[in-house]
Amino acid sequence: MAAGVAVAGVAISGTPASLSGDELATYSAVTRSLGGLWLLVQNIDGHFLPYYLFMHFWTLLGDAEWWLRLPSALILGVAAGFLADLGRRLHSTRAGLLGTALFAVLPSVSYHGANARPYAFAAAAAVISAWALHRLVEAPTVRRACWYAVGVALLGCTHLFSVLVLPAQLLAAAWLLPRRELLTRVLPAMAVGCLPMAVLGLVGWGERHAISWIKPHGPDVLLKFPKMVTGSPVLGPVLFALAAAGVVILLRRAADRPLGALLGGWLVFPPVLLLLVSALLTPAYVDRYLFVAAPALALAGGITLAAVHDLFRSGVLIPRLVTWTVVMIAAILGMPEQLDYRQHNGHYDDFPGAVRVVQAKARKRDAILYGQSWLRTGFGYYGGNDLPDDVLRVGTARGKAFEYPERSDVAGALKGRTRVWIVWRGTKQSGLTGSKFPQVEAVRAAGFRLSSAWHSAELPGLTVALFSRTVPNSS
Image 1: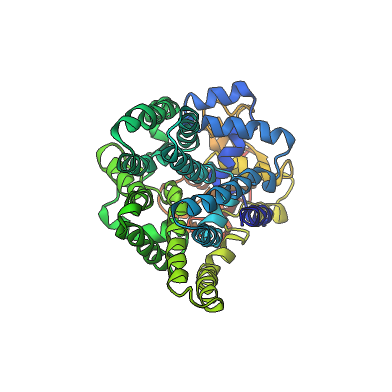
Image 2 (image 1 turned 30 degrees about the horizontal axis):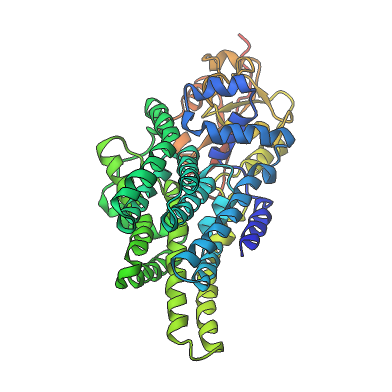
């Protein structure tokens, strides 16, 4: 089953979906020199340094879309293997297999398995740390405590908010172990494992301006959690109900209650605590930060299906048909999102489409401007040198951020030009009306008028607009 998840992820990594803006940030970071990467993380995305370092060496072998996404696919295969064994430990081999099967058909797994960002690694670290904790609880040895510390350290090194699963692990350990074992094995291992998280957390707090775009949310956003964690508005509520039943099944038996607390807390604590962080510290509630709860959702659903199978175990064929039919239904319910993720704009940006629009109609003396300077990374990745003149860019260094240095004199940069392309992330209206993009206003002030505009299918999407003027301003 784990191999199947990995193979599926590898296949998905080769889909034609364009790299998203976030994935292009990964590409921009990891294709710099080590010195350039260090300069970047001192100003932004410092908490991603472990992931960026890994990807830096990975991209020494290539930077194609599928290659950038391959690590995420492979690590989810690893996560599936640990999830299957964790299900065996918490309930039964059948629960592990069914939970892994549900995990494999989640649209969010398809998305993050083909996403050059660290969220697949965070989900894998959540599974590995829970698995290591269970082994430690079984036999509280120093060696197993060290392995648990490694699992906790992986959480903090993948994504800061993945550590929101730790309260569930602590609750389960406190329930299962005598106080002496808890104090001498689990808590020290957890404390050591949290050291990288503490360092990266301080770095992230100092760079919190990077998430200033996140808007505050109220408690009502928790109603969207099933959709967020599964990636499907239809499958999400269904699977969440199935998972809730699995947690209840564990909580009903005294011997299994700590395991139910582990699974239930793993599912509930991340969204609730993230909302609390957003309310008390800084807005930080984003759906992809909650992907760490996806394995718990799938495994709890697998426990429910295994319990249904056991309830009718007097038969042989019928229980298997029922449980695996539910898995098939889950796959069907998530199929619209699965297909959507495999479109050119499946990652909500269509850079190849935008580049093709420009290349199809560009002329020799055309210029190109970018509403957000980081869009150059995407156009450079897909368009190479076959693009109009980038008249605002100053130098080649990317410096301390993902943006590029630009000259401010738009009119001066366009002297002698009769046509200019402007690209921005957003709808046509967001750029053509109002003052959101000063480049548009400056181009109009220089005597250019809109000739045509194209927008990709998704929202906010990418807009490519062509402006022209009859007589070039050569003064």
